[in-house]
Image 1 (spheres, rainbow, N blue to C red):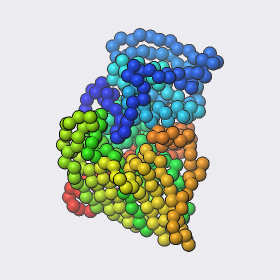
Image 2: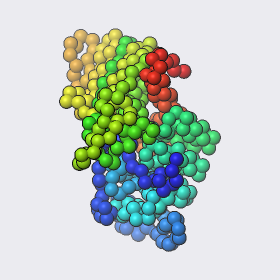
Image 3: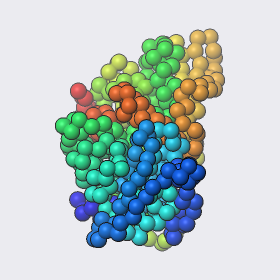
Length: 427
């Protein structure tokens, strides 16, 4: 594992990140909370120039009712923090305030602070996790650095929101879950597909008996990444050792939504294959070898006895990129989306039961909308809204590190089943 500078240099864990601010950090750096403070004169800051990696330290006057968030990996140019976490948190100003961020360099930290309107901008994660101005640490860097950075936050006694996958494999996830339990802090994983309004709605429909007894479920999706052409900044997704594979990301998120609605897996068989032997880097003539599987097929039984199957393929399909059906004794549900990443794309729900001979659109009720719809960041905002409830009321609405370990164990079983050809039983 690299040092802290390497750890914070990394960006998001999915295909499709985009630039948010200019390279000079230009943009509207004044947040809503900045404007509110300016209006009532309550902003009070003090700047101290620190040596070495300490950067800037400021004394903050903040709203004690809001959860103060520090984001590790808030790159001002591109990344999942810029595209999802920051817009999500700014849509929930009643519950959250972004008080700090960190990158690996002074220049990028200053640019990020200016771009996002955050007063405390650190060039290392140590100062952020130990800051008295931070209640919750969001770890939004690449998978190989989750263990190091989430560990530092937990050791500092802070609540943690760590992006998925929680660790680079099952062992790291178990280590983090054990540490969170030892420290007695709230630690959640970014499995935000289960927080999607449509997924929460379908879970309730199942519980309420819309389909009767669930007989089977089938999910097919496109990985979007892991296709014939890859953006240079996402090249690492195609290197298995980085832990950011189609299995761990695309399949992991979709499988978590499936299990959240229908229950955990009892046993499974799996097939995995590399069908594209290489990929090209966008904008270049360079080709690279594919070292991670771009075809993943899983089938088996859920704890309820219902049959399930999941098939993910790399790239993008000209057909349906996400199609999930749930079939029961009394009715059927169908979920579709334009993209295969269940945690990002808006999902439409169709259903039919009883004497109905076809499916109809089932609008998702407003009660499932815990945050304003806002594109790719919607489900992250939904997850943060749930976190606020868990943090204040002790509920269990967000997936904890223990929940993430369950999903890692499922993925581990898929890999073992595919490698050995033997059916795996999960406990």
